[in-house]
Length: 441
Image (cartoon, rainbow, N blue to C red; front, side, top):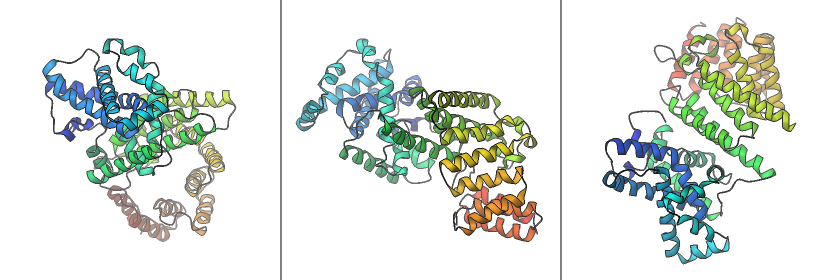
C-alpha cells in the first residue's frame, strides 16, 4: 500500500501497542516490509506450520521494537530478525514434545542446527531463500482456502500488511479479517500444507491459484466493486509489487511475466482514468499523454519475455499472456483511432477458446463493434442476454447501451444505462452511467 498517512500499519507495531521512534522506526518498518515474507518462509521450514511461523516472525519483530531503540540497529537487520525468529522456533520446539517428534519424522533436525548459527555466519544458510519465499506464496494461495482467505493471507504474509490495512482495503472490519486469516492458517496447519514449490502437473494448477489471487487484488484496485472511489491505487501497487516478486522468484514461468505485463499496462493509465472532479474517464476518451509510458515500456519488455518463453517451450499461450497482448494493443496505439481492434477481437477469440466465459465474449463484442461495427457486436451481446448469462453483471447493460446509442436507438440506450447504474455498487461508476443515460433522452 502506498498511503503515507499510516506507514506504521505496515508492521505488527501498532497491533502490539508499541511505537518506536525516529530513524529506528522508519528503518524497522522498511525492514519488516521487505523481510516479513522471507523471515516467515524460513521459519516455516523449521516448524512445518505456516501459522506458527508467522506468529514467531512477529514475535521477533516485537523484540526488535523493544531492543533496537535501546541497543542500536544491527548491521544486518533482516538476518537479525530471521535469527531471532529461528531461536524462538527452537525454544518452542523444545517446549513442545509433540512438535519435536513431528519434526524428527520429517527430517527437520538439520534445520535446527542451521537455526543456531550466529548472525555473522547466517548468509550461508540463506541460499534457498527464493524457494522458501515462493513456497510460502504457494502455501498462502493453496486451493483448499477460499478466494477471500487466500487474498487476505497473501496480503498478510507476503505483502506484510496488518489486519487493519487489509480491512481498510476491502471495506470490512478488522475482526472479520483477523478471523479469516486465523481460519486460513488453521486450515493449512490441519491439512499439513508445507512450505514447498510444487512440481510437475501440480505446479501449473497451483500457479494458476497464485496468479488468480494477485490479479483479484489488482482488479479490486483497478475498478473497485464498492465505495466512493473507482480506482484504488494502493491495491494496484500492492498487486504489482507481488507480481514483481513472483517474476523474480519464478523467472521461467511465462504466465507470471504475462500477468505482470497486464497489470503494469493497465496501471499505466491511472492518471488518465480519473477526471478533474474525480469522475471516471473511459479508455477511448483518455488523454494518452498522461499515460505512464515508462511503465508501459517495462510492461512490454515483460510481455516480450513471456512470449519468448512460450515460443521456447512450444506450449500453448496462457490466459495472462493473451490478456497482456490485448492490453498491449491499446498501449501501442498513441491515439484511440490507431487501435488495432481486429487483432484485439482475434485475441479475445483465442482467450475465449482457452477459457470459455461470457465476460470474455462480452469483451470480444466490444472489440468487434469497432472492428466491424456496432450491429455485429449487438448480435453477440444479445446472444449473451438470451443465454441468461451475466444477469447480475452491470457491464452487460452498459455495453449494450453503448451499442444501442451508436446505432441511434436512444430510448433503448437510456434504459440500458439506467439499468446498469442500478446494478453497480460503486458510486463513481453509477454517476458516470446516469450521466450517459441523460445524454440519450
